[in-house]
Image (tube, rainbow, N blue to C red; front, side):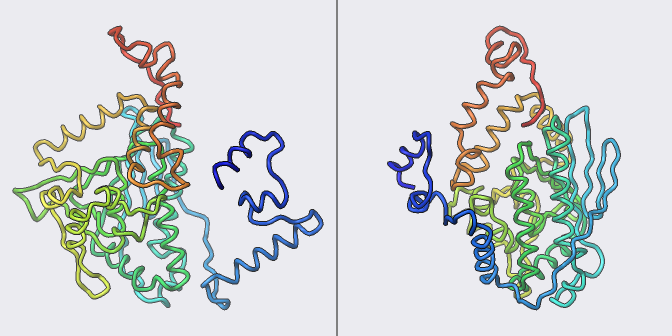
Length: 375
């Protein structure tokens, strides 16, 4: 909308109605009450006709998710959640597929909702929403993976090779939306890349979604050292809500580090596997935050988590949102991606200006008292 029309709209009690609302692009169309239902139906029919899904395609039934819960854990087939209430942390482990996985459309369709990429995405999505809704004071999420990296890369290759099929396309869309939920969650995200992990291909996006990624270096035991491996999924197939890849966000769209990372990715569609990077190589490419060795690992991770737990949760929410979307902006990020909006919110919260707020006790020598609930 033009800025002058927006000025009128924002200062008019009666608002904008009818054909003027269409002309000013506030709405797409108008209809009289008696014709409204028919107009909506026609609009839906027109949009449905543009779908690339074949008319004869059979839908996939999404069965109810199976999960088990206890006071401090949630378990799914491909995702496990462990809660440490004393430290106010949550550890989320995403598991690689096991056993033979479908590689062609017939096998993928036969697997249906049990196909690992879709099943994992649904379970991770459910875990994220459950934690965001029910565990408000657990401010730090630790992201881990577990299993065979080759199996993750093979699943990703099947997705890429068949991405023109409607079911595969919708599964990639589900993965994109699930990882985007992490990006917009008001929680600290730390990724820990340890032996036995599988931060490869689409699961490497968990490390790039994190506010920090720590990778264990094992110079004396290279055969046990964890690896980080990239493929097509790390260069735009699962974009942020601002349409950037997480690597492009990480490097502020600078060509040199992006090209260096891309050179390690290989070409899975032609059977060329990407380079499996150890901690030193990943650190040199800027793909991880730090690479402590096994002597320093426990202390460095402990200190990082304890420091985070002592900070104002409101300030962290603003900090994380601003840094996650600091490079590129669209309509979806104009509120939660702007530091000025967060500053206005943070500085009027009790954690800042309450009786024990950080601004109230600043300079007095007293320690601020925070409500650790994340909003």
